[in-house]
Length: 332
Image (tube, rainbow, N blue to C red; front, side):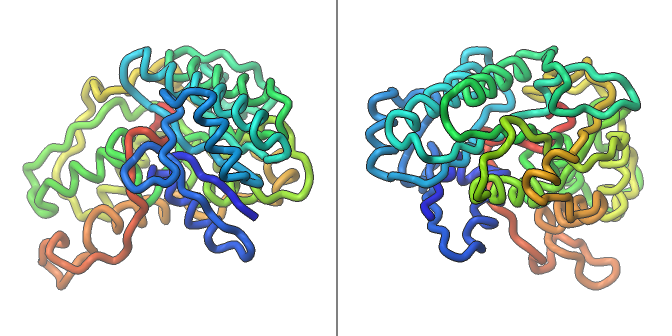
């Protein structure tokens, strides 16, 4: 089975490639716009005719689209998140109409949800940010096609390799730059009052692999989350705990590019029963484990007591991350 992964060098793309490579009888093709991706495919700019010819030559049995933009100006968001899936669906229909398309969508497509109420796939999509609107446009292009296609609406992915554009990745990077035992240090982060559904990137990757290889047709949209809404503050508390940081976490206005994409959404939790039924999938990684593994991948493991953990040998590695891939941000 030949499976093309687009955005293969990104956060979720890297984990998806790892999952697919572990499956017997699967040949993974690494596509994207980053250096090292072959074939080189930039869904934001590649002409339809060129993409169609490339897909015809590759003749994939399935395509997993992990490419996406989480921040930037409106034209960039529209090009990557809306135009990209649209041209991909059209090109795949022309080149390999029997292939399955698995596209990674976003919980930001749902917009504001009622506190205490889970979000199901039947919940109307009413995005409140440009990011969410462009992701919804991409979803509609995929679900409105004649392809055997499914959109995995990913909630807030976290885990090893989380990009600096996400709160977990950014906070881990800030903690890394701070001496762990320095009591007077302060690490500034954005608003921590919201509740989000955090799901491990490796669980997202497993869902993508299962969707790409499922022997039967799937529902058009499936939520991929943990099924639990957690205060964003728990991300900071867990990372502080595993890092040994003794300073202060300060909440400030978050001016990180893309941080506005769900500022109006204060509470969100995924209903994930449909993914369990369709894919026999369920989250495997606990929240604390995801953050511990994120820290281990960002900072080398601690040495002897009192030693700077940055001087020890790495405990684990993570797939490379790029801002052109979906990220584990509370704004997801």
